[in-house]
Image (cartoon, rainbow, N blue to C red; front, side):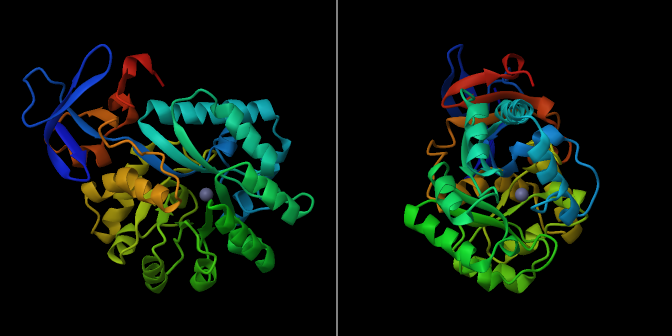
Length: 358
Ligand SMILES: [Zn+2]
């Protein structure tokens, strides 16, 4: 299957030789004439999700403060009132959707303290998609005591925004994380520009959004080697626009995420299409740039967190996407749909679309 291969070495002719048992060989060069007309790319890394609120899809319209801000934005009210089994079922459905549509790994920000992390782990049990989960204190009880038990239960902290926390507590959480060798990450400058130096002082593994940031802030992230995860559909929902080509031009590592499950289905093809659509406004984002955000960008973020989930070479986690024309990269970021995914290769095993129906 396949006519083209795309990975860190670029686009070239190539195909996969597969048998009943799985992937036999990745071949470069012209494929046999009966090979399926398809593009083969590395599995997606969804670098920012909140699958915990997927049960509340679709979210009502509103400003960031009304919909997602703690402690009483819409998301937090519904998270408190929804029955756990409803949340668990929707988290499992979101992760299954990711597995079936070619996502090999995702980085989730989970709300609701230790309880939320337990629900997350339970909902994912047995699913073939890898995850890094970053928790946060629930806001009930003593935040300092809670912070260390949250950290023990996950891969690090994934916080709403620096301004939602008292500065002393924020610094303590950051140093606690460093001492444990885990990741500290947060949303930054989503709807208002925040002080980038104060944020970078916390030594984050990566930042999410930076839609209200300015070029000087991007330059500071590039100097500090801190990647930025952009979420174009979530930004569109709130009326913002990620400046992806400007971020890249500043030398920042950029990755792609689908953000809240109550806002967007965790579909990386749809996210790439939104990134391309919005990137076109500033004129400098190519189809290749966009596919890299969804594949190698996320892998770079994971290395920065010190957690390698994609320790496999691109040859074992792959997505095979059917193509109709002769420009597979442009087609992927403009008209492809996840229904065009023909197969997902995971650890050398081939999951054909007909057996992993979404
Ligand atoms: Zn988010």
